[in-house]
Length: 457
Image: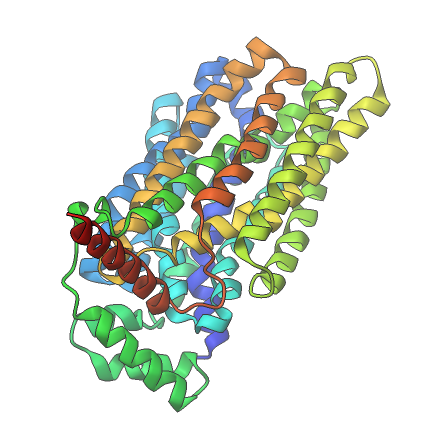
């Protein structure tokens, strides 16, 4: 392994999250100008926003599983190239359909990053730091969204400003590629492909030269690597079913609680309740700063509080915030105070999301699947997440027209409280457990259940 610091590895390993956040967040401001210049209807606006999500579904479905065959690092580099091409294509799009195609290409890289990076970071980090390290991905996502808000405001005065907004994503894409050239491969993948000594070198660096920890982890990895690589039949098999339920459930609930409609359409919401475009974009920047701070706090406490507790606290806070925001929206047209309450409630909602469901979902889907299908499982959960994201985001403008700003978010709030039941019934705790311990527990419970059934028969 090239001698690089753990901080360098974690930073560039998570840098794809910044691109993820920037490319999904920048459209929230750019769409205000694209809509006017291209004369788009509400359905076309939905497609400009959601084209990235369609691409993300494809990227997570195609590139994610390939990481089990070609390695996490190589496909991270490939994703950086796709990010660059999609950003440049979006910036120079002359009309609607070229823009849609370019954003689909861009979305493939976003989907690949969402499937690759949580797995990559989870496999590099020691168990005691895995939550913190894995949640760096979400911190990068939120930092990318904040940068997108700043860029949106910076170029809002230019007629072609939206082209700069979309095109500047090429800069971090180039940085990701250059940094990725010196990143190590996942030690789990190295062991699977017969490169145990290289895996030891990586683990030695990531564990700060703690020989006992390296030996223990390497022994566990070798044991798990002996298990033959699985496919779809194992992913949907009885042993992995608890992990699959967690992965799919968290992926769907994270989206149907409305988080990304708020992130993508916040300026539109602000203008609907009476703010001007410039004021809406400035308010958006304020939310972005608050967002990054809250996510940084979440990163710091990720390995100190149980994942399930964080999810439940987040759901309660998000649900209450949405109900208050819906009530304020009903009166925002006649009252400036109601409009301000709406903005405050929206900000608190995003804060709860950024501190809990935002990072915890990605951390957990990188933890719960067994090694021999981890890439496939993480990819499948990512596909479901992006599919739910696309459905919610694509339908949001039309639903907003139909229900109005005061009613739509009540439904999202109800789903926040429904998620508490799901977490209580279906999710098992992963904090402070190694990936190998989690897998061993799954196999042990499955073997015990099988033996019980056999005894009864």
